[in-house]
Image (cartoon, rainbow, N blue to C red; front, side, top):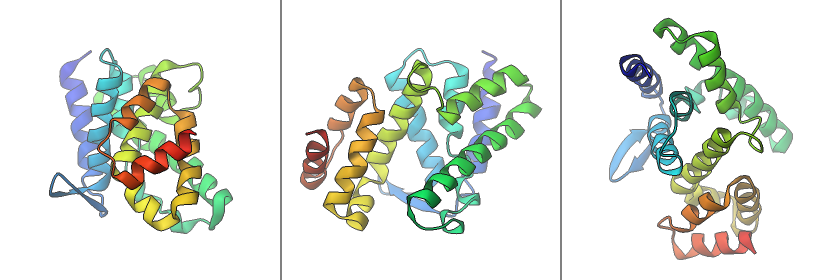
Length: 194
């Protein structure tokens, strides 16, 4: 790995995500949402796969690159609209990361690998993609679980959690149970696992 080039890429991704107008409070500090998510994704990928390679780490950092630029409210309500938005968003993330990496000297094969991991198309056969999915689910549980449960109510949240847990490896599910969850959240996870 060319460490200097990698650090330039991380800095470029972080600079793009630092413009996020949406914020989350984390450890008492208000942070740009996608910048925080990228940092947490990187943490989880390192924890889940200590041997994670450059493409895997770049994909973790850029998984939701400039997500706010394609807002959900530009799509119809309901599951079909949500799925179309997610598909378009994923394509956008792949395009945006290519535009950041190419000027730094990443070749088309390296960029394509980062895009493959971001796309998560081969989760069942690609351990790096599964690690990406695991990290994404763990970040969701860390940062969005409470708000989701408050918005959807317990029963719908359990359904979301069932779909989330089904995408996770057994090891990541154990990590999920180790998160500092409230009694309500832990109860919802247990219901989803039953």
